[in-house]
Image 1 (spheres, rainbow, N blue to C red):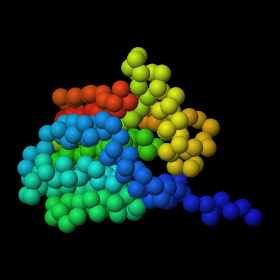
Image 2: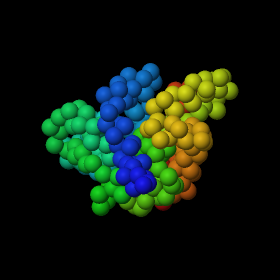
Image 3: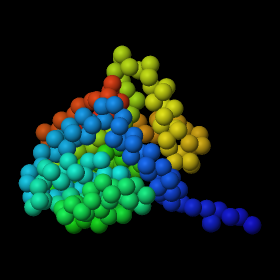
Image 4: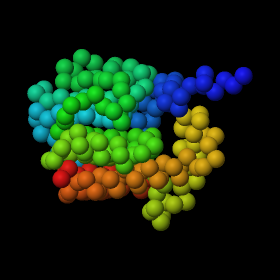
Amino acid sequence: MSTDSASPSPSAVAQSFYTRWAVLYDAIARQTPGVGRVRTDAVDALRLDPGDTVVEMGCGTGANLKSLAERVGPEGTVVGIDFSPGVLDVARRRVGDAPNVHLVRADATRPPVADADAVLATFVSGMFDDPAAVVSSWADLVGPGGRLCLVDLAETTHSSWRRLNPVFRALVRATAPPRTRTMRASPTEMLNGRLVAAHRELETRCVDVRATTHALGFARIRAGTVS
């Protein structure tokens, strides 16, 4: 008798994986050399004002939440969305009783938010089957004048550091959920392709787009205002 129907979904596998390794991912998110600068530049790129509502899609363990809360002030609102209960538990401990930060367990492709002034998505574009459609839905969420910012990792194109790409590919495979590790196609090629699709969609939907690279070219920030 086939047991396929009893197999957990890819989403369930990923949630379980990130819950199990939440503390390790938190350490990576906070202590990797250069990551603090990347996060600061991403928050700066949103150009938040006091009173704004900002949603972080795939907030993980909450490394960005306090910075976002400081920018929007006590009169503003920060919503952190993630599908993994384990990483949200770490995020809750990090933000404590901050009254203007709200954490929600939900799918970033279907966020339970009616409207917002800005959306930040850090290292999540590679998790979506159709990242362009997801980014477009976020643009619809914030509407004209709203801000979008994507932060993602991919192989570097910097000529001085391309020799490190094999190390990056090994790290991507090692830190990917179990089913993606065994896929025949390279997880890094999939990640690269999804990043390109997501960032192209932001370029399509936004004006005054600003793109920067960090961490030897492995980290990409792209932000703009929805037209």
